[in-house]
Image 1 (cartoon, rainbow, N blue to C red):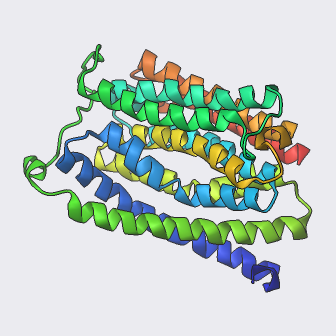
Image 2 (cartoon, one colour):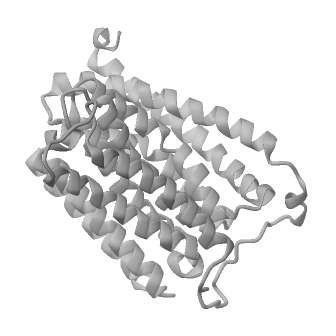
Length: 343
């Protein structure tokens, strides 16, 4: 159906789908904050598990659809390119939080452990790439390891949230994760959860539309799948993270903002596992190109920088943001330039 549309119509469809993603994700931020307060799970955990995963559904659909059609590069670069884009969104959010650097005010042990787990999950595809191209029922064993590590990581994150073995130093600018309305804890989270689930389905459908439109545009333009995946579909499907991050910071839900990005990035690594399942021409990890690995390495580097910023907790920095935000903007800008010139 999409192949019958003109290029101009396809571009308009992409813009409309992106707009739907923006509107839905803005509403989801407020709902996630309510769920965190009413369920008593905390903003970091809800941001990582609920908001991060839900806002990544559109990207998941793009990667799985690309893999099922045999385009391993689009599936992979969409996932790791989205991780890089979403990480740089925290630097943009840092620009909007003027009282102190975001990583200083949003200190939370659960976000740190999620960052460590994210680096582990990003390393596993490299292990799969370097390992022999062994498949069992069409799947590389590293895919099962990634899924198991993600599930285990969620358990560890909750344990750290409920019984942390260390706590960050509290300052005048540290924002504590407490409900703005004390009565929220007495209300049921069921209604906001149902609305949240409905909006998540809207995001998934929007992701399918973006994937179909992008696939046709790739064929017509002659651009590489890695370029389109990392810089077009990845950015479009990452718009929910940008909106929810900025909205969460504006609401003062700083742990939700950071947790939503890091947790969303953790969920995005499952794009690779799901894509390996959908890819029927052998191991997805052995069908990758150097451009795909470049974005994987970029995501690893940016996550390491983000972790360093959370540990250092610089209160003030250049241009009113932390050193890690400056570094994240520089690394991502360099990666985009290199990809654009080589693609």
